[in-house]
View 1: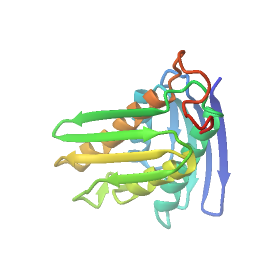
View 2: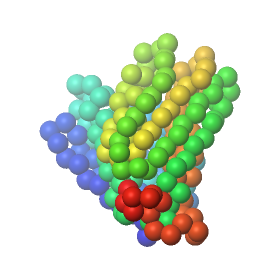
View 3: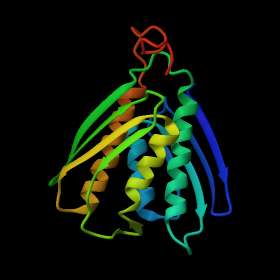
Length: 194
């Protein structure tokens, strides 16, 4: 089973995160940030990755530590659950509309973390989540999972819609990339390692 459990405890956050790559999209999520809960729930549902997450952070200081550390843990869990990455598709992409918004996400589980996030928001907050932290979240995942991650918001008026399309496109791209292909022998790289 391609599962992973990550526990991270610092002076700023306490996080317990578990994933099952071969799940059905079941989730139990409590980050103490309602909008982030919503985004991670739909990530789980759209990727079919089972996700259990409990996070406590110093929200009285700022949301940044909690959001970034959850990204770190999710990235580490993806990396751990994939192991040697034998038989996976490796690449995934998705273009997702959300009402007036349109977003592209492409991933490569190459072992080299490199994020490129192109998204602009007119609002400072969506619910209880600062929009500037969306980039920090995805960058933390990319660096810690060792994936090339590119997200492009083509257009949109509503910040909620743009962010939701970002999470849904990321979910679908990851789903495609981590799926097993019976025809793939070993690791999908001429180097023999990812």
